[in-house]
Image 1 (tube, rainbow, N blue to C red):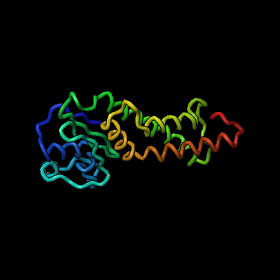
Image 2: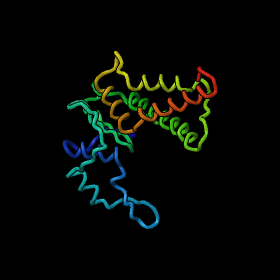
Image 3: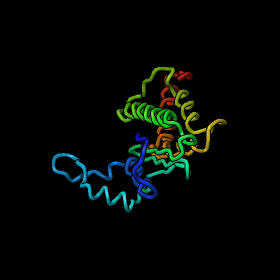
Image 4: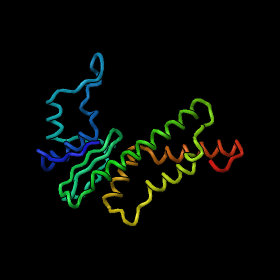
Length: 183
């Protein structure tokens, strides 16, 4: 996650810079001999000046207030009007929740893919995931439009809602097969 505190860019270049920060893989040479390495500076300058199309980028800024982008690879944000923009703590909290839950769902998924019934502590069973899904996807009375847009952009680009549902199903099936109804 990148939070741009001060910017040398304005207008389209600022938008393009944040898009690049949220999707840094466009600046990686995947054909490098030993391992991926950065592309030349001329590519970055060109992308900053001209921009690039990437359907997986999800904007979540508010005109005149902030510029924000989310992608599978990350989140980038810049407050144009700090007193009206999202607080960094809100961005970090959302990103940490999404990454933690994504990793937990992946842990459950691996067990299923290995042909095992997933084993998790009872307090982190399907009900925990159902509650987490609700907290992340349901708008709150005190939440602003910016909060909703940030959450929706982060969730849609991460694919987490579908993973949460799949993990819940796997844990419910395991609980039903074992005769438990609590997990």
